[in-house]
Image 1 (spheres, rainbow, N blue to C red):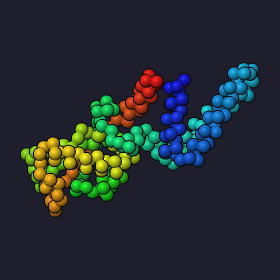
Image 2 (tube, rainbow, N blue to C red; image 1 turned 60 degrees about the vertical axis):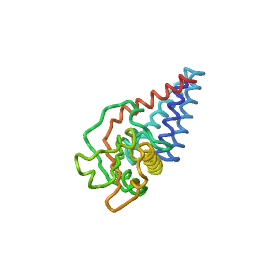
Image 3 (cartoon, helix red, strand yellow; image 1 turned 90 degrees about the horizontal axis):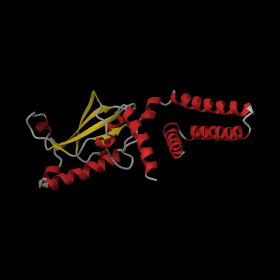
Image 4 (cartoon, one colour; image 1 turned 135 degrees about the vertical axis):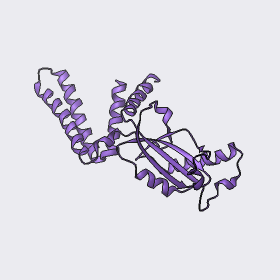
Length: 224
């Protein structure tokens, strides 16, 4: 019962995020009709009209979701809303499936606008695995034998990730990098040719994330 309640809450949250309050209110009304007719059907099993009302409410909810999905891309409902309050590491979702399509971008340090523009260019229908590299000079990065500094483990991001959260995360990792490797702070000072951040993002599987959501709900129940 708790699993069903958590799934309903999660589904209603997605409806509110992707379709808005007006659609959420419509669905809530028909959910009330569904449970009310189900209750009355339990009291009076012979009353077939309650069964028809129950079926009609289910079909109406399905139609509302379908109708709204023709306006808002339905595949975007499968996107995990990561990086709202914190970053999500690729290791945490336990999936290794990565498609061949890759996005590559190079940014100046401490530039929130460039990070925002990068996220806005991501496809609405996919999640991405993101690698973040640091290079003191842009010309050095183009040199194949130059060492590379990886700021963190790969992240999972998508079109709905928070640029501010990623920006703050990168800043913390940059200063941690300087302290950890005993580097001079001068390495973070911006010049015409660097330093730069290199974003390498790879499209990852959507279905695995939906499975993770369901397993997370079950895990919450097991801990209650």
